[in-house]
Image 1 (cartoon, rainbow, N blue to C red):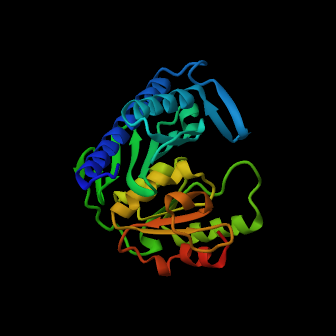
Image 2: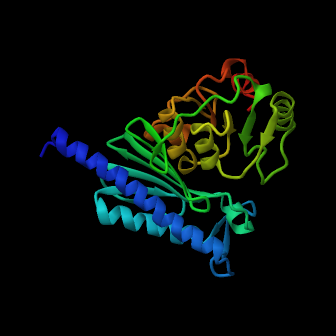
Length: 285
């Protein structure tokens, strides 16, 4: 049967509602695990190494999100950080149940749930939910909202000297190369401040709503960036994505895995004159 436009519109509205519900459900699990921290909720396993961990709460939060999705839209396939690919259907979900797990496990209240939804390859919505601050950032229908209210960001500065940059680089797990150290030194020398907050998803959300002008990341997976990119795009911001060879790539659903370096910026920020623009073009970052 061919879907008619009213049915399609209704489905898209349902996807948006489910994304919000799933993010809140996962966030509630994560928040309980954080507030009632115990050896059980913080039971930790290493993935790529000591610097890359998963807790029992990550797994429980992802299970909660998936449960909501499949109960409402059974024809869904889900890519979760903890569970990998599951399910089948025309609607795709990309989930990070706790982005900022190291912060979470250390007792630092800066982490979030990130959920992006697509239907037949087209973006439908992106949700990033910070359960500690009870802030739900959402992009849907080309509209950016924070806790349901439309967001109209104002530009805090046009040049590097006037703003902060958010980045989690240099990354843990290995001693930074001389090239990486030099690139970080360029950031420190160029921007008013460099901040390393520990959650890629919240970094992108903060750019989208105008709390910071620009962000750079280079060590992430699809679930770290999928929802945040939609937020920045809904705000009219710039998204500069490059693959492993330094070539520009469109960060669509089917190309997210090829994105290896990412800069997002507020509309109106002079990215072309930014230190980050040069570092990206040179392949230094």
